[in-house]
Length: 211
Image (cartoon, helix red, strand yellow):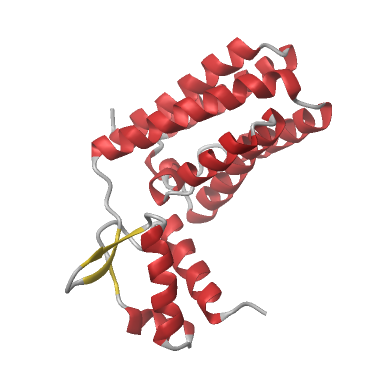
């Protein structure tokens, strides 16, 4: 059975990821405890965890607020993603199994069917499928430590909400990158895979910054 602290952590994290708790929002322990039907102590514990993980910021005499990201901080985060994911994609091109490639193809088919739908459910489904797509690539690479570091970077709400910034043109480009990655993996061409993944992450950064 899930503990009260784990329940509070999952509740807050889900709403951070979805954008329901917007950047700069103050999180009040009493309101969260009331929503969950639990005491304030496990809520306070969950908030401490999220502050330590960088999801929230604590301001003395004010409380916990949803972390805000400057343009420069977003650039640094996506620079880290570029370094990690390009290396992972290059390694995956040489070690991906037929089963892993087949899973990527199935995920991509589902993403294609979703298209550029902007509804909350479509965005949630797209986020989950996209994260799994990149997760399979990380697994195929065999670069365990890089994958752990990458998971930490992409867990940030600012990354998870990337699709909310995408217009139809951004979405078409993202899907095209995925298809080209599949081509690179089929060809077992590590340099091609690295180049496409680099372009994919830089395009996501441009969408986040509105350029």
